[in-house]
Image (cartoon, rainbow, N blue to C red):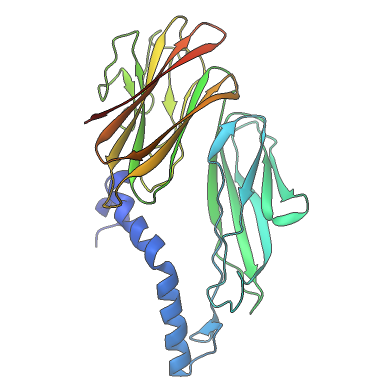
Length: 299
């Protein structure tokens, strides 16, 4: 029998699996409850005599500048057999992973355990775990994990988000000074070229990094350039790679310089295969000049 990894050979091929999971989870749970009741094998909180566990869901910004406090939200968690409200009465947050050398902590926000505050201290990837417990039969959920990519507070960073599920929108950063071209490695940092080696060669200075290719909707995609090259121009593009039949999407691109958000650009109703030429970014050595272009083409 083929393994999941054999069947799904790239992140983009996993979109269908996530679509089915996201769209059909609640209906299947509801059908299970009805079947259990009709068969007389349990009540509205059990299936085959076993409690039906709640579902833990965590959401947040996906990332931000290191050494800041980030809020993670667990209010979408639910008990599938709750008669009123979410049916959840306990939220349990833990820090599952953090970058080497980190002393990060995760605690309930202002005593409200529906929300957690992650206090970050170094750049890198943090993973927060959430479990919830329901009020019907006191069953615990399986843990869910939420990843946050915290970028350095130096250089230039980009965060891309969009407002539709499952579809695939991609962030590109082109090294225009060194003759980079859109969708052309090594001068374009994008999903097929996540960590290119830009000048100076063999050094991390001047090199961008795209944390991951988000193929399941909403984003974020986070691209960081912690040590830009002096007097270099970079070009930020957004490409609607695949709409998966969901049609247009509204996109938001944030520009961060030295750990501070300095500009946010939006484009409504981006269509499949369209490219949004967002802006150029010129690095002066200590700061960046962002010049909007805001034009659309097709690729």
